[in-house]
Image 1 (cartoon, protein in one colour):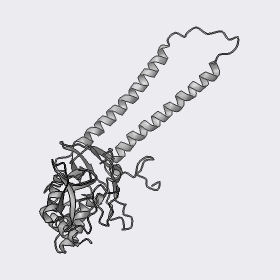
Image 2: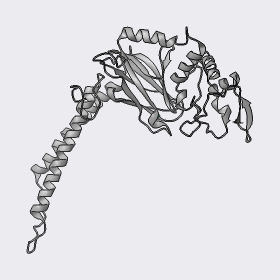
Image 3: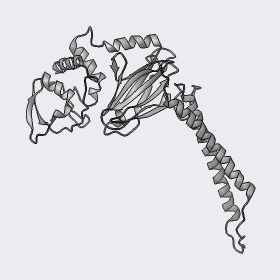
Image 4: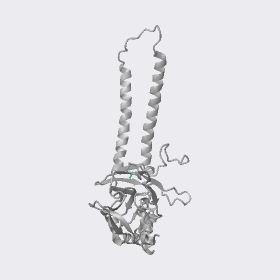
Length: 333
Ligand code: CUA
């Protein structure tokens, strides 16, 4: 990171058009604070040594005021604070208002994964954007407060239930897939607001492409179930939608996973508590049970599990994706 000219001491390299401004202001405030901290402590230590109480010492009466000194210590800090406000406020306004021609991506935060939905209907669990173009993110949460944070871009915005928020960015360099020579590693995307048990695992990667590569990726992402067997497509959908965060497909029913393991379950009975009921009943894991569990997870909650699964609306998970996931679950031994 030291070899990269475009980085600050405290953040990853600057990869958006905002990043330089944010770092300059941050560094200015940081070094200003450091300067005054050292200066004030030094003067304090000096005064303690110089003027501490000694035997036989006669107290000086309180000093009267000193106009020059008082004006100095009022005017200089006011100028500094005014500068910080002006610089911060104008840059903040720039970061709030996306240009009208911005490319728009819907971001859905949920416990505990990210979903990105593109204008052509494609969606992904990693963020892909074109380089050098304003991209506006419309953020929403399907459960609790989350926060969308991409350190390399220096953008962070809350995702609030029942409300839309937004932020935007122009990425200034491509990432490639991280394998090409000279390509940057994909950037980290974090959830920056504590949102429950797996908050720290609510991560994604950000890929920045040349426009032509982005268009190709986008088309592939929209048609990812085509031309492959349904169980293979189902496996892709299962990973893409973040199901693996909460469901093991290797028989792990430990507390590490919020939901029950799903392999070898097809056609078997399980005990669930139907909504509003007090006693459990047995249901068979079949097509209708899977569909209901996805569209209305709280209709039947498996005994011993909490009702924490997010609702997958048709926008989040299309019917053909449910079909593919059913084929995949059937195939799991
Ligand atoms: Cu989502 Cu923390």
